[in-house]
Length: 284
Image (cartoon, rainbow, N blue to C red; front, side, top):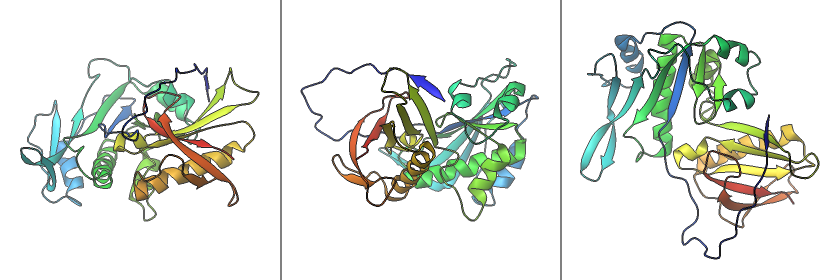
């Protein structure tokens, strides 16, 4: 759980000419290890070829770049193959870098702090040259890549950097690869903050991670609603936007915790970092 103070923002007289929106950002995740890891390029390629028959990697072991010719990325001056890469950001430093938020806002893994304390090494995975792809195709490529990398390297934890969340490796792989796929498990987190200078027991909850795909996240500020119910509702909204796209407009309403409640939607900048556009929900 986090604690925040709000600073009142100055009002601006000029309204934006276009609706506020997010733009795609690089998708990244860290695999965390207690012992120095190794990445067997051929094992990764073998795992990927179950889905991508043409995948290949010509690079050196220091910077492993994987090309997916089946997935074409259209650029202004031509077409290239989609790519994912592996880096070793702290190869000479026995200290995996984990942001405090990843432990403060981690609700799904009781042993997370104990496991994180054992992790000394990290392997960074990211997509590359894929931002112009359809967001679902892009996420599918990256998560397929990350699942294979996780299976072949056996880390102690998967650190979804954009979601500020640590995930148990088997849980991550299972949630992505099983028949009832949880597409956002490795990308999105629902966070909760107590507002120290707000009304008594006032809380802010939000989602984080959708912005990486160019979609809006959500936030809601309240003091008299059930936190668990709000959290589940935010997850439902996240999946709705992922399924249907960025279609919720300013001033529209969305169903709240009951069929009778309608929450007004307003696009604004997030009250809590990272900086991004969110749909602010106003409970009725």
